[in-house]
Figure 1 (cartoon, rainbow, N blue to C red):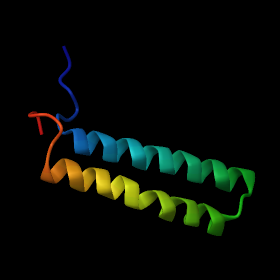
Figure 2 (cartoon, rainbow, N blue to C red; figure 1 turned 90 degrees about the horizontal axis):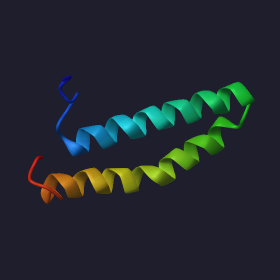
Figure 3 (cartoon, rainbow, N blue to C red; figure 1 turned 45 degrees about the vertical axis):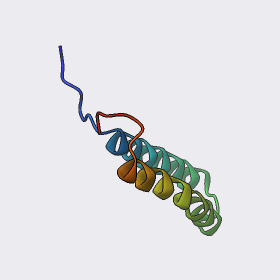
Figure 4 (cartoon, rainbow, N blue to C red; figure 1 turned 180 degrees about the vertical axis):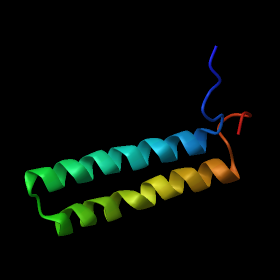
Length: 65
C-alpha cells in the first residue's frame, strides 16, 4: 500500500486550504470578478485558518501530530 503523503493533520489542512483558495482564485479570474473583493474574502477567512493551525500546534486533537 502507498504511504500517506503526510501524517500531520495541520499540514493536510494547510494543503487543502491553499488548494481551495487557488481554485477559487483561478475561477474568479476566469469569470472576471473583482479581485479586490476576493482578497477581502480571503483576508476575512485567514484568521480562522491560522487560529486552527495554531491551536493544533499548541494542543493537538490527537496523538499523531
